[in-house]
Length: 182
Image (tube, rainbow, N blue to C red; front, side, top):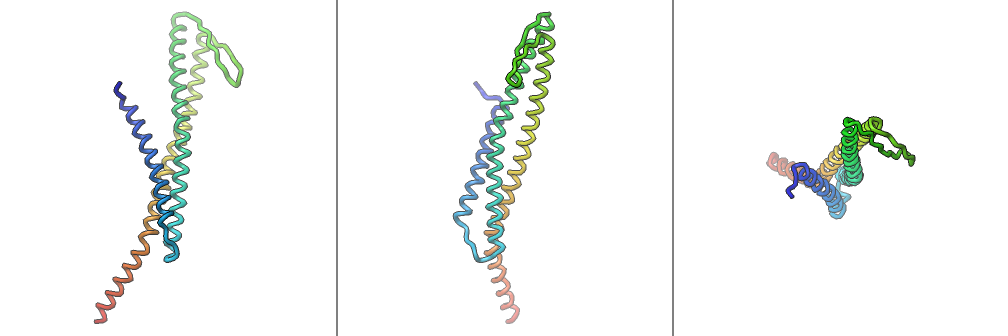
């Protein structure tokens, strides 16, 4: 059976998130393995800041990945409850009073007909609030992950680029002063 656009989108998003998480930890590991300290204090500081930012990005990515299944589970519950509600609402319209059992806090209660539909509506509203909170947390974590990843990469670029840039500037200044003195 062919996948829907939504299924493809979710699959691609999950692959991208795993790629970004793997990339974050790979860059962090490689930068730690290839670090050279001692030449420039500022480069050393940027190197360490880059490591910290990449580590924070990776941890945020893990925490975000932990929250995504929670959001999907809530969405799955909402869909199931809406289907149940629809069936009970049809029964109510036909005049059939169907009893429905609800369990809250370990206590079972039975609601009949329109009362059950209202209970379903309340449950759906509660789950939608939980989903909105989970979704907001996921989005905030994504932006924090992305920012800290970019800061980490930027710090590493500065740390690794500073020594050759200073050396090049010194050579140009030396060449320029030699050129002007002759």
